[in-house]
Length: 99
Image 1 (cartoon, rainbow, N blue to C red):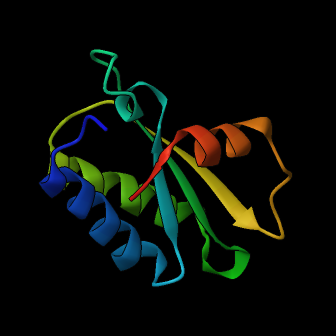
Image 2: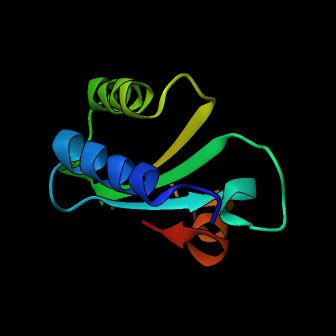
């Protein structure tokens, strides 16, 4: 995983502050692979549907920029029980690193 421990902690803290304690976050994509270079921060966020609001996703992104600096950050959200299942959800959970 190509994140500093402090960055991983900052991501987890921001997710809990915005979405609550039942949120789970995975880092996936090139940053989850130590052999690759560069790349944006791809995050897969899984949470109960009732904990989600688009405004919360925007607040989460802003909190990440404040904590991590101006970086390219992509966020994929899976609202358990309400989101249509997408292949990216499987890829993120299988190949990603849970934070």
